[in-house]
Length: 113
Image 1: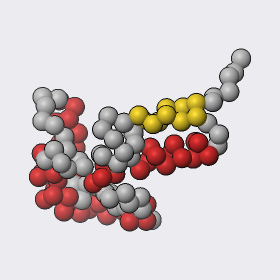
Image 2: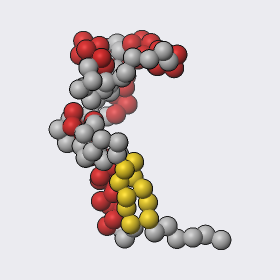
Image 3: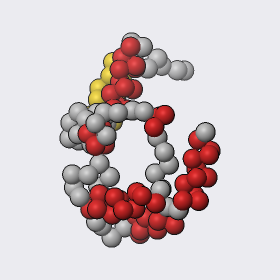
């Protein structure tokens, strides 16, 4: 027995969440958007609402490290990560740092082309 989906909840009122909500609503679904802060208050605020796949590059890039350390610790940054004793976060950051080489970036860039 299957039921027809008539309503959905979208978590996140950023660019992607609102775009998804728009297209779901266009298909006739009732949509509720849930966000902890407000419309475009997270990452969408940080990138000024731009959604441009053609300008996307792999994030682990050597220049990102210079910006990244400051940005990770700044609560107003779109990539802010609260400092916490989380072994998974440390593992992720270590992997990110190890992959932030020009060679790894070029390899990832070629896979996008």
